[in-house]
Image (cartoon, rainbow, N blue to C red):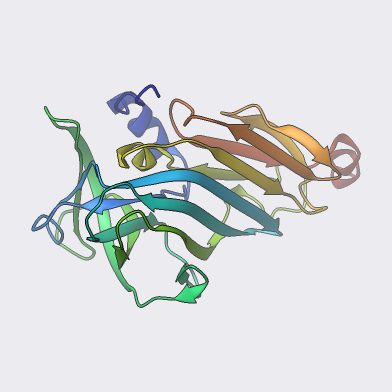
Amino acid sequence: MKRLPAVSAFVLALLLLQPMPIFANMAAPKDPDVGTSITFERSDALAVTEEVLDITVTGSTADITAAYSMRNVTDQPVSTPVMFLAPNTGDGSVEVTVDGEAVPFSMDTYTLTYYKELETEDWRYAMLSYGAKNTPGEELVGISFQLDAEPGQAFEVTVSYPYRLGGYPDYNYNVKRGEILYYLAPAALWQDFQSLTINLHLDSDMPVVTQSSVPFEKVSSRTYQYCSDTLPKGNLEIEIDQNKFQEALSTL
């Protein structure tokens, strides 16, 4: 499998200009960086054999569920901390499960101030505790939990949370639109990545995908799907909108 190239500073700058983006995906942070900056490191022990990302839009909110099919590819037990990056989760109804069982997790808020590409294959996000003086930037939530796997064990990890769309999803006239940005690239830091499926379910308020960084296929009314055996280059960017009839009515 080809490795995903490091995300360029240009791409990150573009993301930071977007309102209320989704920065989300999980990888293993490298201690003791957590608290001042977060460095995600490559895991040679745990592989992602499949990721299924379900995004269900209702009004101005998206319910996000990321499900990872994983496997310990070694002949030794593995125990590793994991952090899932997410935006402000609003009402805080986050759920993390392993093989269907809820697992304990902690949530800490950080401010993303810049991105630095390391000389190794790691990547670094400089995140400072929220509220620190003179540290403007994008607010992120780090959802931290522990993964434990026996030799050769296959298991499924899911992270679910609500997210308020960017754009103008609450407007009642023809500028109404929604934006979804999802940070895919940390998945490249697992030992292997074999399959990605993205299911996008829209509601009647904004039923049309007007722009996307991946080629979605419309599989049913207001339901779109993307499937790939590798990670796409860059991150997931989706813009949804009203249809022409709705826009015409909203201008009256």
